[in-house]
Image (cartoon, rainbow, N blue to C red; front, top):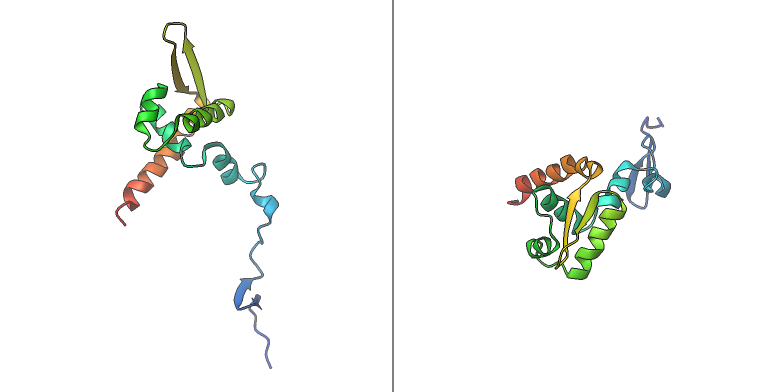
Length: 129
């Protein structure tokens, strides 16, 4: 009987190609995987929306909160703090009464705009499906 030249293994009804690289958990850690690293900075439900709005000039807390349906004050505060901690945005406080606070994308944050704009284009293309 002739052996098959295929390197496939049958395991519990599933075929696994033995020539393909097996992805280990360590391969997708933020320090090893560029996609995981990116998602650790801008992933989640709110951060891409916040970044998109900041890129369009919406930079005051109250305006951001009104523009993002469903986000609570606490969640918006948390997300803005995380983005600031990651040096993606800056927070500028103006010494006036009442206090005025504005958020701006840093150069590092602006480097993420092609990713955000690609997400926007993909969404526009596939929303009707």
